[in-house]
Image 1: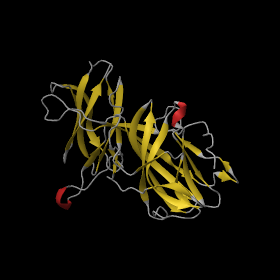
Image 2: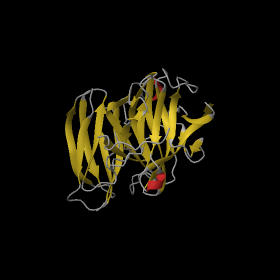
Image 3: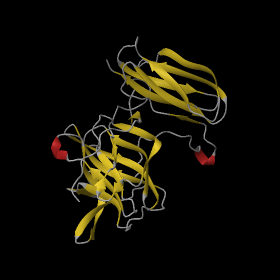
Length: 302
């Protein structure tokens, strides 16, 4: 099958920059390390019946939201093929240059199947990278050797080319049945040649506490990060309580109080950092409730 031209357009998605370990002087944290771009695809992207006869009419997926799709996802109308068409890296644009996969032979040729990854599986140059294929496939001719169909949320591992540099990323997908692929979110490492773990950078949720105790809160990363002049983050509490949300500079001085009052349980509350009147530097967000204290860092760059 000759590689088709990808359709134009991109997905409207939310961007979350995650600072893996940003540091603040005098606050006991370490130096900044890596940054992960996270996108929650909302609503979920459902790929089905995008082949008509031999015509490829897939759905473009623009991971870095620059108008240049890296993937075109397609499903043959009979449920025989579920493919991801990668862009040609030779055209100077963004592209997928390799997939975490395995080769299977059918009809006298090899097909590159995506390996289904679990949360936390590494995606790096040392992973099972398959290069040189313009198409990766989940199933082919109703053949599902790696167990994509009916096995819930799994991850796709990708090697990407953005602006002539190499990056690693993931997609979280579900294939509940043959002929239907659901793409839920994605992430990639913004630092060139830096490994990423499947699912790393995803939206924070309230997690159980130690020793089986109930969780108390979920404070998201600040995004974008670095920022100029505004950034945002969310905070969810497991039970209604009085919460104070403050912003401190690198010297430990409070420069803003973002909230001081009651927060209701059951939903994520959004907050904004306005850095218009602040100097460049690293800042600390601290949320203090009746049952928890949590912190995140953010860098203001002019």
